[in-house]
Length: 317
Image (tube, rainbow, N blue to C red; front, side, top):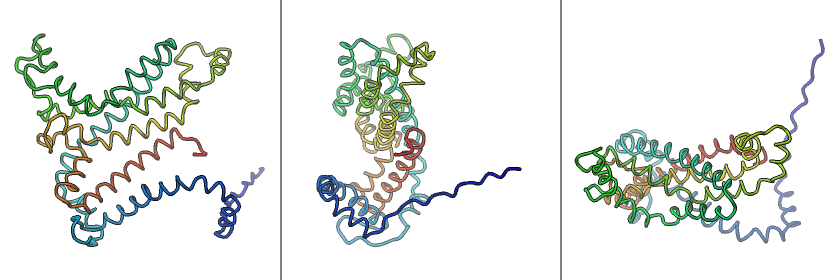
């Protein structure tokens, strides 16, 4: 019986500190060019993250000196914060699992459909889809507060009363049964931003010769082109869009306050993790606890991003 010998795994080359310093001196011009970015990254990202991590282990009211309390903030999050466990986390989970995947799927479908229309109409449809994300809070306060108004003058209530679906108007943004649903609808409507443009640009950059080669090899319809050519060629854009959708869904917080006009939202029906962090940080001035919440949110966001990298990233990324 022939035994197959396995090749020993090659150890990764790791340069020493002196070799790294010699390489930096040899390529000092290149490091000079990236210095502005590196300084900005250290000042505005690395240092705030490190300081926030240290602050999460303290009790700090923004006036006195921070007092080290160890893991007490994290223990309180898991054992004593009833509002977080009964309202905030369930609301955030439902909101994120709805807005993230649904918004991402809609971005991809709309980008694919717009890419199929004649060239003169692409700019018009792209701007029509992208503009709601630019309007942001203005769109919510002007359009959707009127559309979901709780009296008979609200567009949705008036329509439902006219067709006989309801008799009395529904307080869409003040009823705990409907507020979270309204928040999801409004957020998805306004989520066609940078992620949508990234997907659309990725589809524009797919080489047309690949589609011609695919037809020769047996691809017969647009769906097969999408599965076998378009998606494999635009995985970087899909990865970027997926991460932006996840971060946007987890960072949302003001939408419920804008729609209901109350903070906290009625019966905490629209209270998300971002609202909870702002409540402890800027209203109760428990900055250590608020930073611990932010740190845990960062870990969750990073973990989900790693899952996206696993499915959409390449081995070199």
